[in-house]
Length: 351
View 1 (cartoon, rainbow, N blue to C red):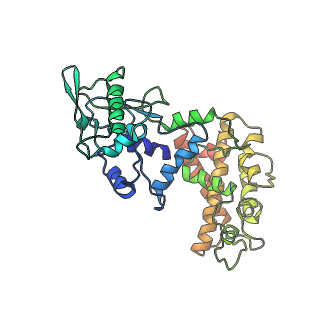
View 2: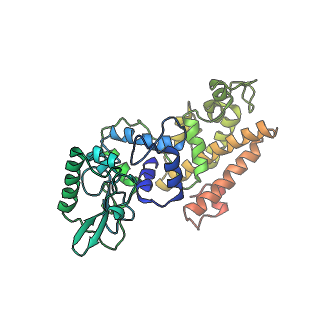
View 3: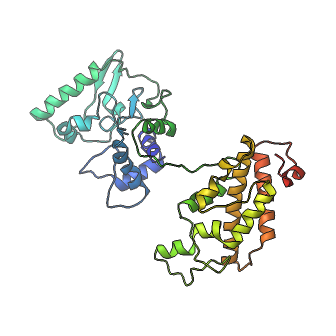
């Protein structure tokens, strides 16, 4: 997703956001097609730093974009790659230093006269030196000798070379990276599109111990007066304790086991709970429903915990179970498009 902003910075020359970024990060003493000032923290610094990370996987964002010349109104003459393997400011640095308007567009330097191209230059000095003159001849030769280079009245087109369609897509980067020999986690978190993302995110963060439990806050040097679990008052509150081994959570899981007609749930950690649907002897569709119920239960327990902490509400087992059944029913029924699913069948877990 960060790489997408490289594509947008290249293709949206008139965008207000691009002009703001250019005004903040451009340095006239060190020209770059995508500028960044490392001394300025923020999202743009993270966006530009993604290139070095992708280079380790053999993916160069600067070479993944190419321009097809049209009217020259959306391509920078010096800063964009359009008539060679690299931008002209990289290939001909001495000549670029002699340029008066370094951010000029192709239409500012090229004019069509029938089949011929007429160059319009603007230099800082009346005459060029020998090195600059030699590089100028190379630029002219490169442009005139480029096969397929034809200036027209049509719009300039930008091509994303990693995708056959020519337009940027996150999937194309993902596909490219998947071919690189990278270390992958043994078990990736399993998402379920039958529940909202906010529900899955709670379980995803809990598995990584990223929920702001009292133990997690204390580990981040945030003052916590009492680390004891507010739901049971017996042990320190971590994600694993709160959602698995806490007395309140265990009562929730055993009631869910009775409702779903599965063996009593015995889980030693949160991963056991998140993979419970895989080991239960239920049908394919029922597996996904059970997984959705587990995610909703984790979300509801966390919600009950927050109500106890911030609203001083006493944990209510009946309310939590009713909420799990009702919310899971509404989400599964509407998101799975199982219009024949009735509340009566759901209450008996007849899927």
